[in-house]
Length: 204
Image (cartoon, rainbow, N blue to C red; front, side, top):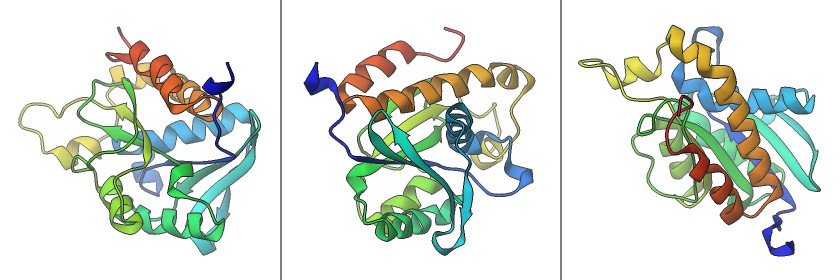
């Protein structure tokens, strides 16, 4: 049905994470890993854009101009890069989709959310600070809770366990599928397709 198709002409899909090899396979970089997986799926090549402090790739997907964006600044400064990127291309916060890790969800679980607080996530806090709003679309990807007695920062900056690493390819596949649903369809339909199927983690 026509009303189920996205009316957006542009989508800026941002994967949150920290730069550098030491952070590459950590839970906090799961948003970045999903955007990289989508780029690979589409055979798009991300290139450095130093003027906006990002790596990006641009193309057409389901009739929508899609920008895949990875800030090259650290997580707590990523909002600055996103603001510069949107301003440079004269795009709106309404075009933005942020992919981020979330400790409030089981590992591998996905949730599309249209706004809300940062929940203590430094990347989301930075975006809110630089864009001046909490109302932007995000794909939350669960990384589970810290182990008993473990510091939260140590947990999210830690490497995937062997069990998580074995599940990771499926999580990345599900994430890329969810982003394509958000590009093609209305947010409401994408929520119905993604959120209901992902009530728990990948093992469900």
